[in-house]
Image 1 (cartoon, rainbow, N blue to C red):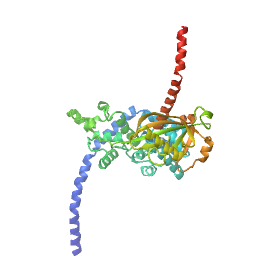
Image 2: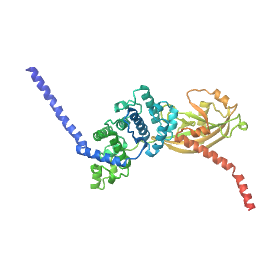
Image 3: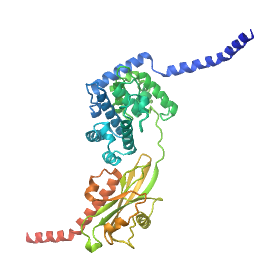
Image 4: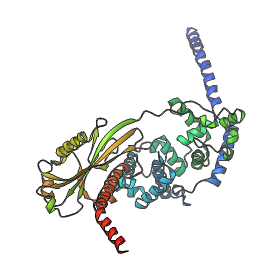
Length: 456
């Protein structure tokens, strides 16, 4: 009897906990779509997508259901999704086509070097994405188990997050999983009139719940693409074309805006203030070394340029640039030159007072280069040098140290895959040299024109 009474009391103590759990579950259910809404949204979006989807190279399908064809498509989806992060579709198309021509399968990519990959990626920005693609390809090929075909396995690959894993798994392998990116968040926020901070962790979880509920079990890949496509071409951030939207009749934000003109569809999701940009200042010194031992003996009108490889971690990791120094705020030309001289002497043993002579030294100009979180002001200087004793002896004396660098001629430099910032620097230098060459020949041209006028 005592045991029965104890068991009864224990059950009574548990009852309140069960009762308090029910309202929370009901509240969660109310936040989701109804079965009728889910069916209508799936049907409307897929019909619209079948008629209106953009023709993009990574959407090409193979009729074959062979495993190697699935893996090839998975690889294409992976490359495209990584390239599309923070980058416009029209920009990505050319990069994607060139990439797939050079490395048509993941096995081809796995044999590439980081330098080759960076050169192919040059101009797309966010170079860390390219490094992760290469590392992921090498890992998948090395393991020898084929291309991962589920979200859980894809998440183990470097650089593949929830969104990319969902895109690959649903599009290439038809796993019934959702995707949530900026476009999807915008569509869902307007469909459900969710005004919460889209960056908040709990809000993001709710968007994943909604996307999970909506994804079509028969055509998960097509449905996910239809949702992303809708956000990209119809449900845009500033000027959504609600009258052409296939699911506007299910959109709470649109319904509210029709009832009250003061309510804007574009208010959903709420605008989040961007983090304050860091303002950096740097000096880029384009060092051109002419052949010969001094100015009178130089053997070529154009010399070679010093390029420095950035560290393997951090911003623009592993990429080539001209010797550059981050400055402590705005500085005058004297301070910048002193900083450049100190860097060149320490890193390359280039000392105008000792082992080289300055042929030309000019401030070429400045420009601002914007990264996602950094506003970088770059002061550009051209420094043309001749090495005393010749380049060969200078190279032999160099201490390899930890700094990776090399000398390249102008032709090689022009064909290299350099970042847009480095290209801006080189373009400024080339324009300066061309202008200087043109200016030096003006007097002769004037005399020629004068003679012609007299003859006429």
